[in-house]
Length: 280
Image (cartoon, rainbow, N blue to C red; front, side, top):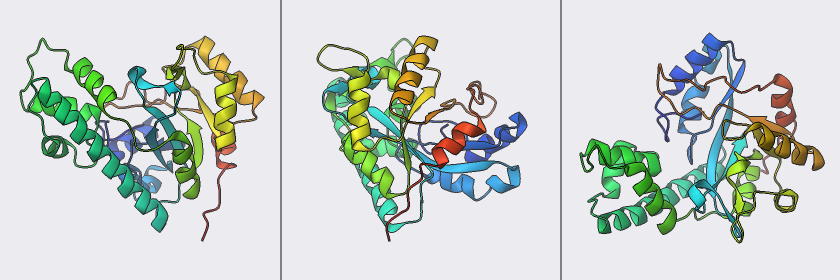
């Protein structure tokens, strides 16, 4: 789930409060490219009686494959991170710098399309995550669009065609492992082979396993039942634990997906068992 530290709308406290109301025992805040929401939540999770797994969602590119919107973005989830190591703190700086560079490239392209947007404006909207949705919200905040404009489609098209993450998927897996993380492929149904549009198959998962992939997200609203069966079968084939979650982005009072996926304690423990020791 996501907070306002990335592209969600809720605070860590609001998510923890809702988790308690629903009787959830374990959750993970997986903000994009930042663990600030997770860090803030760690300080207060105990008072809500909820285990908050230190986690993140990072964006990578994978040569030969496409992800979000047919663009280069493919997501990895990292669970059970050790957030206070010097190496991870350097990684977070790198993730933020990569986001700013992408935002700058996208803003330059949007300016050519008639939208006078600057990266400084986006950082004013969200100083920790100048990503796609904060760009949309910035255009709305600055009244740079009309109600009839489908600004999300415009920004998505420009964002995915003008820039990509500086991290290859193999490098992303390694960085998360270096922080003790368990690496899970997020919502794999959006991933397709670039050459012919074929959905992710056994061959692709085999390549990811060779890179060090630890698990596959199966319980996610993007996956239909047939796709869940497909990726559960691939996970079993490669002896990978499955995972899942609501991928909630809503704000207080709008947490409609929260707690909607059938995540069990057994799933949590199968991921926990994959934790790595951080060197040094």
